[in-house]
Every structure is written in C-alpha cells, then in structure tokens.
Length: 283
Image (cartoon, rainbow, N blue to C red; front, side, top):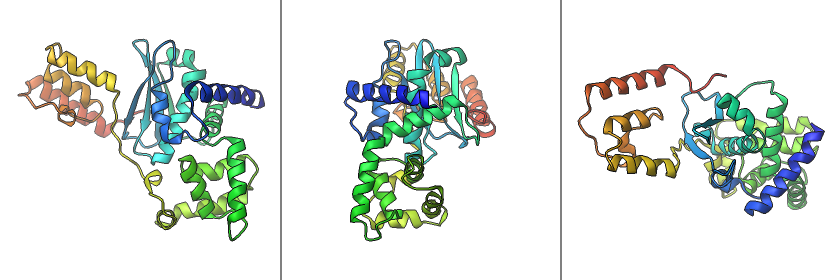
C-alpha cells in the first residue's frame, strides 16, 4: 500500500492543479467527475436511488464512454465519498473497467487492495492529510474540552463536506485519534436523532446526514433523447423503456403522455416487476 500512496498523492496533486480543486472539493465532486477526461471523453454521471442499498455505486463502460453511478439512497456525505472513490477507478483502472464493463461498489467487510487504494484516494482528495491535521489542531485549541468531541467532528464534517464517520475514520487513519476514541465519537450516529440535533445546534443543515434521493441523468444524454424524439427517431414507447430502467417515466422529464401501445404497457409492467424483485447489482 505504501507504494501506492506516493502515486496517489502525486495524482491528486495533478488533479488539484489541472482542475483548480483546492483542498475542499466535496461540494463540487459531482461537477468534477463530469469534467475529467478519460480517453478524450468526459464520463456520464448518474445519481439514482438504488433499490439495493448495499450497493454504493459502480463504474461502467459502453459505446466507448465511461459512466459513473452513485446511490442517492445513501446519505449525501456517503454518496460524495463514493463519487470520489469512483474517480480513482476512472483514473487508474480504465483498462479494467473496459474489460469488465461494470465495476461495482458493494458493501463488504473485506476489501481487495485496489478498493483500499480507491478509498485512500477518496480520503486524501476530500480530506487532505496536511490540511485536516492543521484544522484539527486549530479546533482543539479553541475547544473548551481541549480534546476531540462530537461538535469538533461535525465542524470538520461540514468544512470538508463529507459523512460524519468519514472524518473519524480519517483522523484514526492519520493516528490523530486512537481506535477507542473513534468508537466513542461514532456512538452519536446510532443514538436516535442525536447527530441531527447537535448539527442543528451548531447552526448547520443536516443535508450531509440524510439521503437526497436525487435523480440526476447526464444533460448530454437527455439532450440527445430530446432531439431524437423531436425528429421522430424515438417514439413515446421508447421513452418509456429508456426512463423505465431508471425507475422513472417520461413525465418526470417534461414529456406529455401519449397513448401507449400494448407492447409498451407490457414493457412497463415487466420493468416494474424487475425493479421490485431484483437488485441493481450483486453484493
């Protein structure tokens, strides 16, 4: 892993310079993904509430274009980390993705070396080591307790725009806090509404702590669909099929309902049945 670290540090530094990211890119991570060029093309980004909540996201490759999917049924903070994780795969694993078509991010206890490297990349990109150590020391100095508490973690969480647990894990990885302290700080997560209440008391929104259920499809793709529909290259039945696989309807994107053919009605029922019984990807 140590051999990977220097490579990852260097790649992140190049990214920061190339795209002017700075040290606080959590808020713009989705925009960044759509700007990164891989093989001369930018990837498609899909943010959708997956039926399988064990699946955080995945990267795919089809028709010479990469696609990144993130699960908006996860909290926004979690989804942001997943997006940064997928960036690693786009940059470092393009050839693997092309061979496998899809690389999934399921929640597992044991992770392969490549997945550990992707997590490290995401952590360093979103919470730079030197910067978060500096901010931690600053907050400790002004803390009444002079030791890490839940309020300090929330302040760091909001600054770096990530999940609460991502902060405690990062601090533990950097040996700023020990495992026992990490465990103690994370207890607030399982206490009903305690994280929400303290976040509000500190003057912050709870947007990072709840799922957005966001439905986002690539604008370029939507424009192509619209053009084809206007030119009558795509029928309303086709729109039902296209949006149906995202558990959406044409009406969600401003299309007016036409009289469906029997085949389109049958397809809609089939899609609904599949979405209700099958997961997006296997664990």
